[in-house]
Amino acid sequence: MTQATRIAPGLAAFAEIATPALVIDLPVLDANLARMAAAAMDAGVALRPHAKTHKSPDIARRQLDAGAVGIACATIGEAEALAARGIHGLLLTAPFGSLATARRLLDLNQRAPMLAVVDHPAQVELLHRASRPSDPPVSMLVDVDVGQRRTGVANAGAGAELAGLIAADGRFRFAGVQGYAGHVQHIVDPDERRAAAGQSSEVLARAVEAIETEGLAVPLISGSGTGAFAFDRDGPYTELQTGSYALMDADYDRVRRGDGEDAAFGVALYVLATVVSASRPGQVTIDAGTKAIATNGPPPHVILGADGARFRFGGDEHGILDLPAGAAQLPIGTRLLLSASHCDPTVNLHDAYRVWHPDVPLQRWPIEGRYTTT
Ligand code: PLP
Ligand code: MN
Image 1 (cartoon, helix red, strand yellow):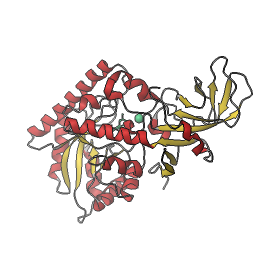
Image 2 (image 1 turned 90 degrees about the vertical axis):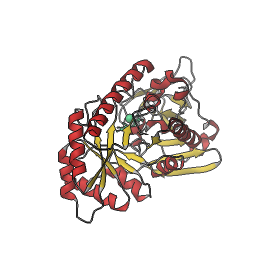
Image 3 (image 1 turned 60 degrees about the vertical axis):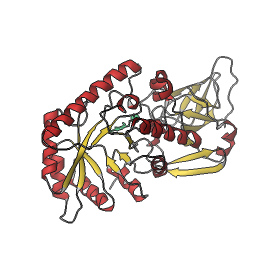
Image 4 (image 1 turned 45 degrees about the horizontal axis):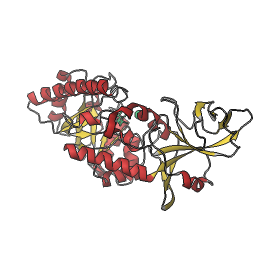
């Protein structure tokens, strides 16, 4: 782990907090937000940070205060949760497939202008069917597949056709394109990552060209993530959608280690856990397992409370710490801080953050917009 937390003397502040719990180191979070805002501003590119990472109106507000032009959302539920707390400039970055979602998007767009991506005429049709004459026009971006093969039009020609369809419908506004290279962000070797990011940028630039050839302007080119923003900020993107940089995790700690200055985002997110069993020499069991820490990432690092211990998952409710040779057994009740394996899905397992700052009493910030059943 590249960075030590300053929480150490403040661990007592969590004594009354039930575990497992998520903790945010607020000075580190604010430093991350300022650093990404400066990186974008210096390159003359806008920043629309992704809320899929934190699902927090409180963090989104701080991102706007730090200079972001708006906030990106992965789901309509995230967008609604943010809008309810007065967060504007929302971009829905994932295509949708139901009339109900289209209607929710139109409802949000009545309160504050929304941007949404589409990658198929069927979504334009859904929005058209869901809309009423009194609805203000929705601004749309054409999502372009820049190599991940997950969402997005498959080629520049399809992108130009879809852009034309949007522009021809008086209920919509064609606002530009999105291309998110999800397959690039986590490539560990920085040179390989740069080359892959360059290929994705070329695909996106070709789609922009094809749309412009049809006589349409492409004011917004949105995309990028924490792994590639240092390359992407030089173009063709007009705005960056980076998300994980705010909180960071064991995965990005590994990926971005070789990136020099651009890797200086600190770990701001921790899982607070308690030793609940200590029956065997050389290991203890803690109360954070797969229901507290996402499994799709490298194992979390033990940051505080058990020097040199290694974490492994021990089931749904349990994690096991293998202690270094010769280390004293940790007593039951010992509190520890671990980094997250992968921040976004770890956050989604919890309903709030406990927010630590050396000079401010512990705060509680809700995590909102998780899936709900209607
Ligand atoms: N944009 C989109 C469409 C995403 O899916 C993601 C993350 O998965 C991001 C932006 C943010 O990427 P990162 O968390 O790597 O900064
Ligand atoms: Mn992620």
